[in-house]
Image (tube, rainbow, N blue to C red; front, side):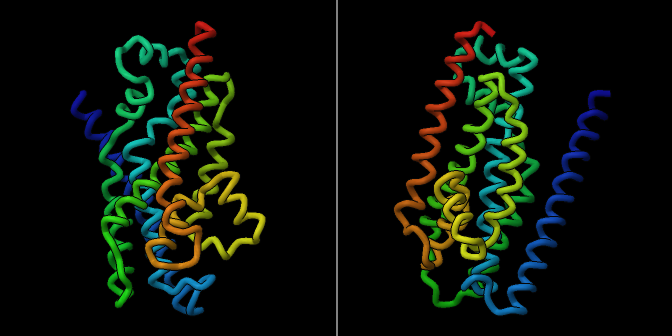
Length: 245
């Protein structure tokens, strides 16, 4: 019976992963054809746009793999099951994220990297550093992780982060496109208020030598925001422990 459960669970996970890949691939194809038909999208050519799309998809896959467990926090706190993490001699956040590790995002990761490679093959003459690519990929992933840690830490304040998490998921759709397609106020919002632009747009722009905030801010955004998010996590966790919950 246990073997059957494992089989069905993995089959469901694989079906969900394939469904996501099909929708993501269809969206990438549709937008690629659209950009090809009109030439450019806010100054981004077809291959440049596909690079941006692939970069953000890869960041999302890395977040799903290493940080996706954070979305379970509210339910664990509400049910009292989070206390078991506090009884262990390891960092509760590390334990929470470790339990959420999975390999069902490998296909998503492969698709994102495949789009990046395909896009670069059509950008002849463009200088490109894979080492810098990995550094910016890590920074973008840390930005996405920081945003979700900030929001989900509200669970320690007896606040359901669900509505804000839903907003984050919707904003995730916006960062698949060049920032210049949006009005100025939304560009500012995605840069300063909820810095989703540092997940994909600014790192991709830096790699392709396009206008943005520059290389240094794109590299530093992830470590800085992640450090701030960890500080808010620790502060919120201390409040939770102080209540005796």
